[in-house]
Image (cartoon, rainbow, N blue to C red; front, side, top):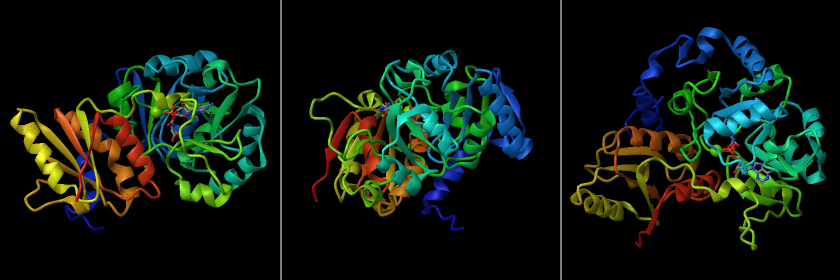
Length: 375
Ligand code: TXA
Ligand code: MG
């Protein structure tokens, strides 16, 4: 493996070590939350124990291929209500229901159109969430009172085995406090939720790093509600057309998208354009001369000579490989928050294809200012 400082993986692996709990390899109890490590507990045993907690109405944070989820029995309103409480999540923001087999989809939905079957065949298990008409078994709390339910079959083996062990569909939002960057490591979940959930299963880092794509298939053509792990180009290969514009009525169809999201404590300034290095350096100087501390999130291609990578600047990935940026994005935001910087300047010069659309969406939502650099 290439572990030169230029390799984006280098940043993640090395910086992950700065999280204190990362050095522990055994199961432990932290403020009343049980932390299960796959290395010491074993895969099957961890999922069996997690499944039992969920069946009894408890909360279990678990890894998925996108981000960590906070799971509860989707059909138990008391359990689902606790998700909203511990996350401080607005009650009108519905949850995604996670399944491990197609039979569960039939149980919780009223109607599955042909296009939904085609999408499931193409992308499940995986980072695609489908919004479908719900059946009567799903409580109002889970769907935020909507007549639809969002359904996803995750790809991560721990997620699948946990849902199977629970024996019920599992409602799971990202396992962060509402508004904070989504967790891609068990350590991130601990930071936000230690003491308020029964269990966290640590399965290492989430491979994709941004949440699933949410697609409404109750309309024709389907409507994109949130860009995510499956790119729009890939969706179009199956569906032909996809509506990507925001609802003309201004009424957000995906209630979650109207809230501030993914935001670190620091002010985020997003710099768009193709040649952004000069603009980033200029802004950095302005903030610094105003007495503020600055952290930079840079693409490999933007680095300039003398740029202090690993210190002031975090290398999040390659601009021509947006997937590499997606993997590091939320971790980088959390890391800069730990350093207590006042301002994060984020490089927006990466390509918008594939995961690039999801990364740009999360950065736009996190930022309070967008600057465009002209070359
Ligand atoms: O990758 C993911 O999707 C992760 C992992 C844990 O699976 N989960 C996740 O959940 O990101 P959450 O709760 O953070 O985001 C769910 C999004 C929200 O924007 C919510 O408004 C939308 O899905 N959503 C859920 N149910 C919906 C529905 N019935 N109609 C429209 N949007 C819905
Ligand atoms: Mg979330």
